[in-house]
Image 1 (cartoon, helix red, strand yellow):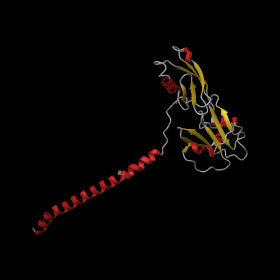
Image 2 (cartoon, one colour):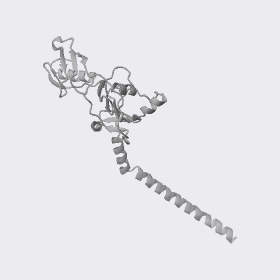
Image 3 (spheres, one colour):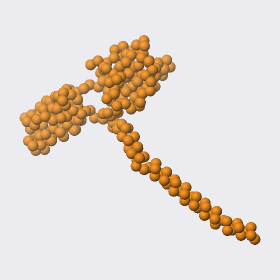
Length: 244
């Protein structure tokens, strides 16, 4: 009887210990979760997200550059028809409306800018813009290439074709480590390493990427080492010094 009595009395005591332990574990887990999701963790996450490049949208619109030539047509007020050139400082000079900064804008955006410039002179003007002269699509090859420089991108061109256009590899080139740099935003460039030597020796060109306007190829003399996937545009000058 005493033995049974001890077991019965001990059972609530054990349950109480287990319950207290569960509550303590729950509080500890909650404290850990709060620590992981607290202000410091949030700040670290925000800082990490802030370092990630904002990628471009698919099929981005052309952005105006210096020396681009625009033909402006105002069908209801033809006396304001004119042809303007984007100046070195990024401005165009409009007849009777002064200077407007348009560098980096798309055609729809510059249309709105010009319409706003004429708002005090014309009532809801109808404006059509034709891009007469603009920066042609190009690619850049640098490093251990026969003729490093900037080349027009005419039609569908792959990495191996671009190397050939640039004069081919030099004797000291590391053609198993060709780097493709591709702009993904105004401030960031994505890097990819290509083993052109392996492609050619295996006769498999499935990884021979097709270039996009503005792509840059760099062939090092020896192992370049590790390159981050995303690189600030401002640091690209350390890789390239193309001939105009």
